[in-house]
Image (cartoon, rainbow, N blue to C red; front, top):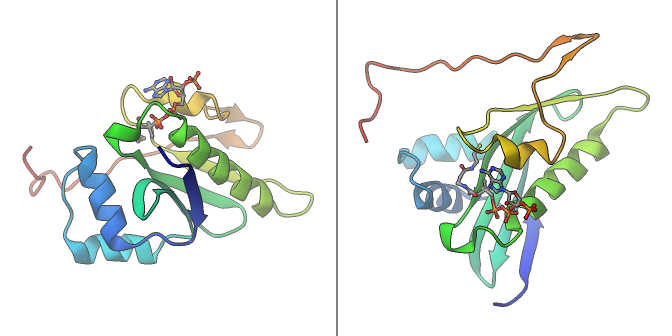
Length: 147
Ligand SMILES: CC(C)(COP(=O)(O)OP(=O)(O)OC[C@H]1O[C@@H](n2cnc3c(N)ncnc32)[C@H](O)[C@@H]1OP(=O)(O)O)[C@@H](O)C(=O)NCCC(=O)NCCS
């Protein structure tokens, strides 16, 4: 296999939708996916030649507050360190964004069973002197897609 190349800022709706579908996530209307991609503050994609084989993205204010979303590697490329390299790019981008003399908070919601993947990068439920990281999942249960 040729070397995997990592590129920042090139995520498209087509790549977002194709990679999401490849890991069995519910399909999203292209307009919805395009809105998500448009609102992305940082994205990194992994390419094997012309083919996108992985992605990770973040939304946020560019300074103190970030949220990591859609960390995906094509199933046939998993287990080769690509997810790790994507997360290394994400963590490097976060480090570059730390306001001088201050800090930032980055959150994510791990898929069930994937927590161990993120623990390696320092993510854990953390109560701190500044409060406790918390999250909520809000769903449109009435119209939720059936698998
Ligand atoms: C999670 C995912 C991005 C990992 O990508 P990957 O390229 O397979 O990961 P890597 O090959 O870089 O593996 C990184 C390390 O994490 C470990 N790891 C991978 N998945 C793990 C899991 N679910 N739990 C614990 N450790 C895990 C690997 O064993 C490896 O450990 P090592 O460095 O000690 O060998 C990929 O499996 C994926 O796309 N899954 C489907 C989509 C998904 O669930 N994304 C996460 C949404 S929160």
